[in-house]
Length: 309
Image (cartoon, rainbow, N blue to C red; front, side, top):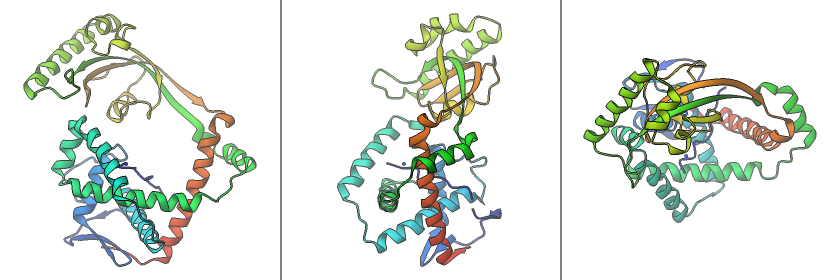
């Protein structure tokens, strides 16, 4: 069963389903999961890169999203039984951090607002996430994981420690002003046109590195011909890496739009690196503890009354 990890807003049902006319998509013990809340959480998972929604107008239920919601609700209900609480100050602190992030990422903010995600909804989700996180922390804190257990896990799951990396160069045409605020729509269109003209030059066989030195607003990489070095999928902005990792070696992207502006990227190399056991210990321990926690949530799931509508 595929699990989406807690997204930390501070951030499978085994059959394909299509939402019917019911106002709810599921019921977890005595709590209804409304279709409206499902759609909002789905959009949150989309903008944070945990899932990719192919058709925003589709009524099809994403099994991973529904599983995530049910698992969180099961854990939250169990946390309530144990009287686990969080302070309003904790919720407000995480909310302000999230709000600041959204204010500097207009694309994310626009998508969430279009889905009806309000500040009250975000605060409610943050509170639940914090409570569930404390519940998980309490569950795993006394579990001991030996070196022998970690080594066995590493040897049996070697493929999990193969890390795909790409080496790439970029030309960035920034759409942020000196205060890191997005420029006006009119100015943004002019910058997009500028980026497209640069891309046309590349397609006409002008030298990528020379153009990067001349035009890129990322001055750190620009002085090196746009070279970003090697990086992983999680090493940079999600919208950026999602497109870059689709490219073949020596292939140049179309314009990639992120909250930072328009990127033109050329992949210059790809490689797979296997992390050593010593370098992976923290990751292995976290994986083992997460597996134990997931089994615990599955047991709560099986012992509860879950209805899919």
